[in-house]
Length: 319
Ligand code: SD4
Image (cartoon, rainbow, N blue to C red; front, side, top):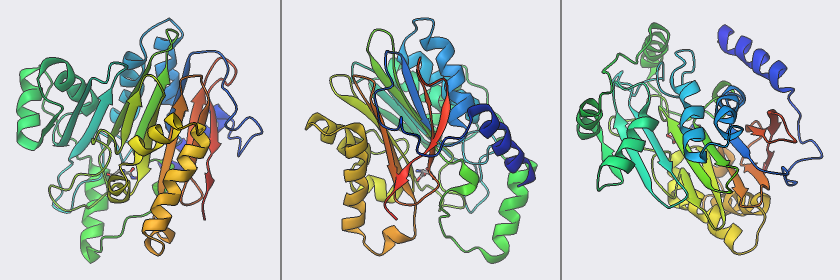
């Protein structure tokens, strides 16, 4: 808790937290552009920018960007150090999608620090889109990934504390870092995205959220734009959230309008429940416009473009 607060202060200072600046939703200007969810989007965007600013591919940028929280043992919602399921197992979900609609995903993957890179291997080396559980792990090992222990002493302690009451209730905006969803536009005007998470803490064994599901946690259409989501995955899956956002952009909505309409769909479907949970969408279009919207206050996202050198914003919200 202490260290999370310290990290928040560190990233905020780095990023100069700008709540709803007048720039919001305006074109980010010339390419390239990368946006990502939550406070850890700032250091993640910085990594992605190294690829984009050198003329690299958006796909490489997003993979490298999301490695940051995946590899950080202090981030308890992604990769190494992620909070476990109710049986104490850290199970990871991730996906990646490129400008050709190639995509790959892993779900319920244990023991691998960078599930996004396993997802990329699924995309590039198999005839499939998604591998899960034991099969995903076996495949990762054949591809040279190392088997590691992902449960840190801190996450184990938090889980044991949770076990005392064992009450499952998804908490919105856990210390401002949940799933990382990252979408990018490169200098060649191509789009890609990645999404990776340890999922909802203390979930049931075998539970998979929206994050690794193409069309729910992430969607990229190189003619139109890209979108990603965070929050209670069940509600995102119900509306095929990221695909919905991209299709709304195809119909002429700005990224901001598209994110708002997707959130409103959740409100319409679940008027009562939507008051108690968090869901956020983040989107970019082919011209470098971006937008974000959430059910609840507190959803932060980071933007990096030539005009906006890695700033953190807070999304507008329905409630
Ligand atoms: C999930 N969407 O597993 C992820 C978790 C998340 O805020 O983003 N939490 O449902």
